[in-house]
Length: 210
Image 1: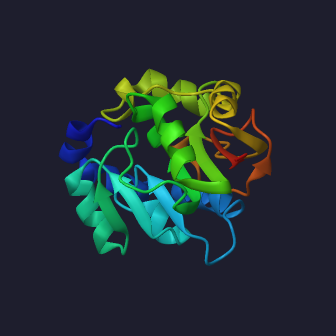
Image 2: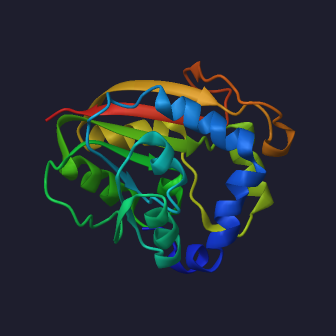
């Protein structure tokens, strides 16, 4: 899964970023909330980090390789297991939905992570993935900037990721996009729009076929 050493070392900086870029964080949350299943569904976040998203989305379980990040997520009420997305420490068909927010660009084997997500999802369960679109202005900005987190990231385009998901047995795709300005230019929470191609952050929701 994601590089444990970088996130263990800079976990405080990672968590503080969401305070500094509050409107980015709240805009992404707004887009994700639109596709969440109804209350009562059992969810898992792969790469839960410090629990920033899971705690606000009602996701109670998470897997995370960084112990420093996991400690913060636990304080936010998340039941965290130390582990990697390529080998999830959960039973087959245990969850109603799985979310992966940004983390997919940091994993060593994205195909295996998606396969594991399919394994732990119930039949017709929902997978929700949030990505920085490789082909968007934001994807190009982060790739050029090469921050301590993103310098080794592998960004995905929506169509590329769709292809991987279809091979893992997912269908019923929907798309929502947000972040239409650079993070430092954002002065309010943005309203998500359907589709992709203009927003820097794209939410892909799909269903496990069987």
